[in-house]
Length: 277
Image 1 (cartoon, rainbow, N blue to C red):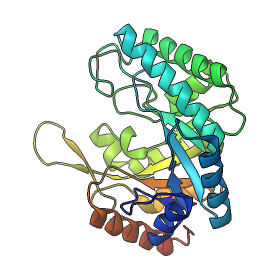
Image 2 (cartoon, rainbow, N blue to C red; image 1 turned 90 degrees about the vertical axis):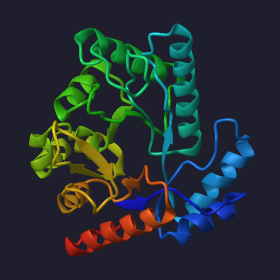
Image 3 (tube, rainbow, N blue to C red; image 1 turned 120 degrees about the vertical axis):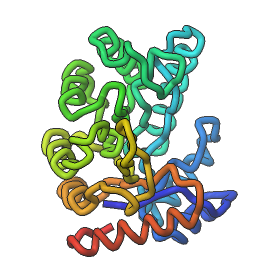
C-alpha cells in the first residue's frame, strides 16, 4: 500500500513535483498534470514518477453525467472521457468520478438517485465513457456516496455485472459508505465485507474519517483521519491483502498541518498492525 495526499509545495516541472511528493514521504500522488498538457510534458512526469517509484494514483473527473440539464450532462460526459484518456496517458491506477445526481446539485441527494431508472442511467453513462476511450492502462471507477449508487458493496457488485466492461473497476471510500448509526458503529465489519467482495477490483482508496454528533437527528461529520470513529487498523489490514501498490490518498483537509497530523496517525496505526506504507 502507498500513502499519498494533497501537496502544499509548489512545483513547476516533473523534478519539482517529485521533490514535493518526497518531502511529505508519500509514495502515491494525485495526477500532477491536466488533460491539456502536451504529450512531452506528460511523458516527463511519467518518467519522473517511474524513476522515483511514485504511483500516479488517480485522475479526477468530478462532474455530473446524470444532470437533468442536457448541456451540463453533455459537458460532464465529455469531461469524463477527457479525464479517462488522461489517466490512460499517464498510466494512473484509475480515473474516478461519482455516478452523478439527477438533482440540481452534482453531488447532492435527490429522491430519484436511488431508483432502478437511475441505476440503468449510470450503467449507460459508464459504458459510453469507457467505450469512447477504450483505455488499456487504466480503469474508470465510481466513488461510493452515501445517497447515490454505488452506496454499498452489493450495489457496486450489481453495477460491475450490469456495466460488463473489463475497464470498469472500484474506487473505495469507506467513509462515504457510512450513512447510518449502524454502519458507523460497525464500520470494521463494513470494511471487511467490502474488501472481501470487491477487493480484486479496487484500484484506489480515499482516507478520511467520520464522527457521529450527539445531537438530533442523525448527523455525521467528515473529519481528519484519527479524529473520528473509522477503524483504520481494520482498513489498513484489509487493504494490505491487495496490491502492494494500492494507493491510499488523504483528502478534503484545507491545512497542511492537518495532512501532516493525519499522515502521522495513519503511519502509526499501520506500524501497530505491521502494514507497510
